[in-house]
Length: 180
Length: 167
Image (cartoon, rainbow over all chains, first blue to last red; front, side, top):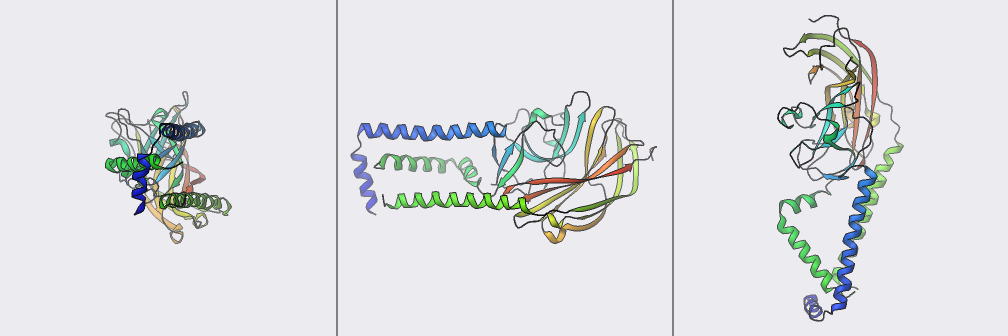
């Protein structure tokens, strides 16, 4: 394993200018990733264009670890749409299907009821106390596309943070020791 | 330039790019499928039709649903989610959609079906507007792919009417 020897040698020979160049390069990579993310937010109209499925309530269609691509338009909400919503006071977005819609004639506001495909009952118990319906402002987006398995990376990093630190440590080491 | 790390990195990047490309093509191929689904719904019986204690109407129906959704399945289809919703208008609401029944169809062979059941989900109005109400029954389907874009569409069947009095 001669590359361990090479790594140790290259750490010893670090120069300040080289280090700064690498820091700037790293900063550019991170910033362009952020730009791409913000651009996706603009294009899809929702503040989270991609979500990872965390529970099994939409199986067998969506398994834990799948990624959903979201989009939010001004179109009215109708039954059958798979929507992502957040309950007031809770952080975790929930991805379920709309099963009931009541739209007011005068104001255009909607009352929406949702249910997970794999659940036996609708989501009334998930809503805040006393809340019977979801409204448009709870809904963050509609699922329009789907990628299987890709979300496991996020789940593993969230549930076992040690892996996140190992990965960042390894990437840091790679950046420091690379010769260009 | 030829160290193990560089080679692994280049290989991984290439593999992920090719995988993303294949997923995009698989999803794109779904646009070319010829879809001709058909369905019929009959209301066999109004089981009961009452006003609940807090004022909302509720009705229980027995439905006979026949459908052929086989043409919706492509090689990139994981399952088709089908559901029947009742749609009607009231004086307060411009649109009410209430889902009465749904099913997950995992394979093409099971997509040509005939089923007779009472409504899986309760048909409750916001108010007491259902007597003598005309409504549509729509069969919706949602094609969930193995990867990529999801498609949804529906068939609207109109001409259904609830009885004029509670029973």
